[in-house]
Image (cartoon, rainbow, N blue to C red; front, side, top):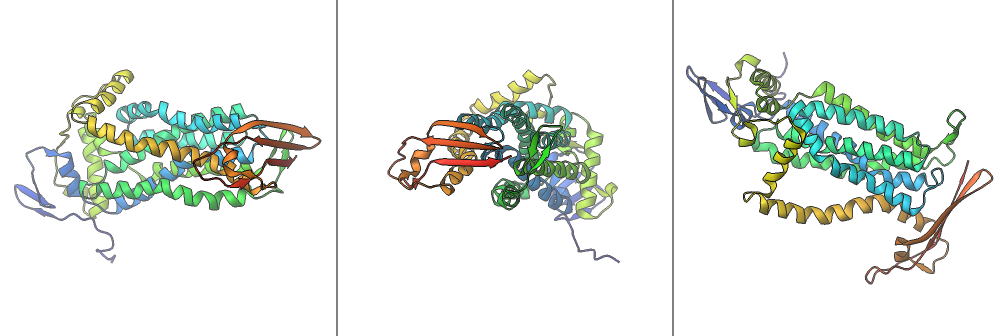
Length: 396
């Protein structure tokens, strides 16, 4: 006989003839129960722990798709003949993809479901990663990474939505904070994945049908694609749709079925023992659902500037702007900076001078590519270090 206390939800229900008392919430079987109260009755248990792990991994995979371009451009600069302008464009397109797709994913999630949208976004990220590995030019890579970032943006946003709408209010903020650790974990886990792959300097397999060599940076992009593929499988086989979505579109029966499944997983009780019989959403914006895309954009945007939320909108904007102005550019350019420092030969040039490139050329000599970078002076405050001009030689 299994240990009944192995994994139990933080939910205790006392069944009485006319009233069910769960977690201190009285639920009349003849009355409608608010969604938040119904979710609190389910409590936090095995499903929430599992979903937290999957969502954290999803955020890690989405971040990898968006912010690995810095390592790729440094490693692929000879194969794709990248100068600094092209690197800057390649680095900015994923961020642009995130910005332009925000409302699109909100519309898909509201009309087709959070889980459905996550499956689409993670599947597309996997395909984009695999296709990027076979880039024949920097333009091809730029287009693929832009498309990949559009879908990674959906994964990033909807993962938070799914766990937020499936976790009771007593633990919701904590779980959202834990899930956000997936973004931070990427910075720590990316190096152990990237370093051994990109450090395989002798690895080069020429593919005559495609007309180029398969080098470590292509293998690294394949790895990023497979990470998203694993993410998609986890969502397909181990997650349920957000019950709130079904209640929002008026599918009471399907929503109740999800709630009963969550109750069974978290408490170990039978589905029909779930005391709630009818659930309602108290939020005004869920009373009606517009399926027109542009109407959806209007409904999602205008409340942010209403009197009720304008202060919060401004506060979020002011706190997010510095973070997004610093973090993505640093992630993209840091590999280039460190590569330049590690190839230093002339110690008479200052570190701050490397941030502006006056001219960059790539030329072919025999079976090798030679990439040269000249630098000009740019002073950043009073902090300057000493580095050199960059010369990278790559054999075919």
